[in-house]
Image (cartoon, rainbow, N blue to C red):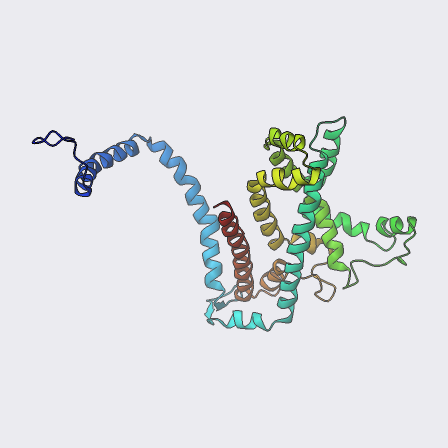
Length: 322
């Protein structure tokens, strides 16, 4: 713009910018509304269907669980409100505290070991070579079986006269036909081995997909500059897998907290509640003892733990990116 009296250019003022913004805003709003009108109604219908299904089958039952956790209800008649009594009982329940400690141990062991082993296998099987597809398929094969079938399979493996004791005896380790699942000191660890055996292939496939998306030129340039294998892995490959790590962390934490089938198939939480997890104890209280209010309180604890772990990790990852 120029001054009409002097012919010199004038600098826009904040007030002028505000007036121009106000002049533009009605047109922008009209354009946005026109874009919205151009969306066919069938698109809104297709979007509404999954939203309604999600609300009916996920959010509404979850909301009911929160409500039931503040009541005493045995499945018949009206629920009796008890306030925070269920949560106060949880704080002094020794079986719940054992299940909570076992869940922490499970998250660390199941999550940590399956990720480490899966990542190592992905690195070993990432390069194309003869027979690599067979190895990948063989390692991923356990994921085809359900957790219940996996539990029954490993239950046979851990029999006193089963393959595990026979294999250990063959390499010189005399276990005296140890009953792995009947010993409170070894039962949870034995189940953990079976769960890792199944989960490793899934983690490997996720990391293989992530490694395919890494830029090989960066690693080649670092190798030319004299960077060793560990330096290339730490400073070039792993940073490019940040998004994959986020997905794997979320999946692993959720799988750890909802693990039920394999434990129930192998020990049903025994012996002496030594392998109870929050999920198995919730099922036992809610559906065996039919104490649905108390079981719902355990379900709320599982939900809060999962949300807490995931939000904490995502917040930390976001800070690192910024």
